[in-house]
Image (cartoon, rainbow, N blue to C red):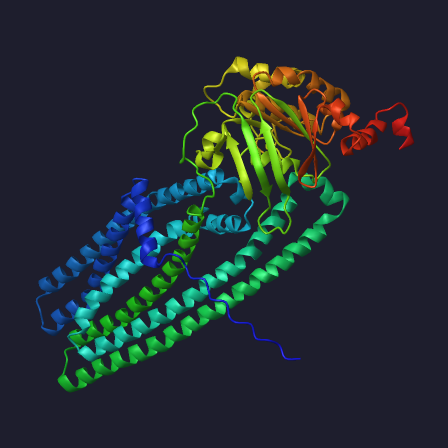
Length: 612
């Protein structure tokens, strides 16, 4: 059977070239007001060239004095001049080099902040995008430490600048020997640079391929250190399984690294051939001139040393250019992460100034997750009037949480519209729109900070009285009485030795207090009592009306008995709202809601648990 040959996919090249990324790094230095970063790079390059010139001329000049039988005083003065110059230049360069530690660090920290802000403020769909996470993962290496491209770029740029300046000066000097010599050297350098550029494009393509393996390695490594998995790792013996998965990802990563090294090896071979040819031509011309024209020993030494150094400068240029090209790839990836497209208007669009209760409406909304074949929601029509209390119920997978995320503006519908007082929310500044919602989701986040910090999400300017009222409404006051410092007690033990680990129910109460403190006109409670026992759940229900005063509220649950206190119940099946009404109305209709309620009610009837 003959296999059909698949056409080659075009390799992806960096979006920005080296010169464009150099401009980006300069703009970054100016943005964080560290003009000394480029200034010190130029200064060190100049010092390097001057030191090289002094080292080049010191031996020929001394030899010339000896050949001409110059007085001892002149010989000593020449030695003293060059020695003093070298001491001064080396001292100044050492001082400037020490200053670069701080000068180069600040632009890196500035970029690190930009990356963190992008990750924190990007549109919610991006946080679930594998492509976006890959960009962030790869770009962290650039700014994560002082060996990354953000700092190493400046050091290599300094080396390149010094080598280029030396190349120009040495070219002028060697052109006095023979123009052909200079032409051979320059042609060889250009050939090496073109080969380098070709291989750097391959290097970029391999970096893209290895990113997935690198991400898997980091994920599996972090799982072994995750405190939440500590019990499972031991009870289920997961460590060997995770280590096998890590080893498989590491094997893929090593494969891509090996391919990169093979391409870089070819670059070294090309450079070696070019260097051998260049040096051979240079030495041929110099030896010929010394024998044929009787070139003085001092002049021969000058040109011979210059030719040897020149080859070194060309090699340094190629090496620095190669490294800068690699760093440019990293910088391109970093810039792509910063400029990753935002599906929402963040900081743009029409501002929302009225934070009172508003009418929120879904008009023929359907939603399908990226890459999915089936729709999660289909043709949803729903109106939430100001002050209305709704319950959304249904079995797991019915689409309840997805519906809430669309209402909150975390997703835009694939089809249809979300309207705020009749206007499509896509025209609003999405950050203003988020201010309308106080929400407790199933996936929660509690910071290793104090209770007060977690409730108010701030460390300054908080309203202590309102905070305590929200803690009371959430039923968290009994916990505060047990904590050593009340609301100022630390939570979590990743940072604080005296931190308290909350139970699932206590965590949900804390999140409820946080949502109440935000005081948005829409209160969203997504399974807020899932981790609570029946008594604690009943306690939350009795406080519900106080929590929802002057608010529109949505209560999402699969426990049907918990929704009686809502004005209206929406029952969802297979991504659609199939029934609407009060609890009693839905029971009277003898539909899917009534059947599910009857099944759940059996577990609470007398003797029901024993009969399960």
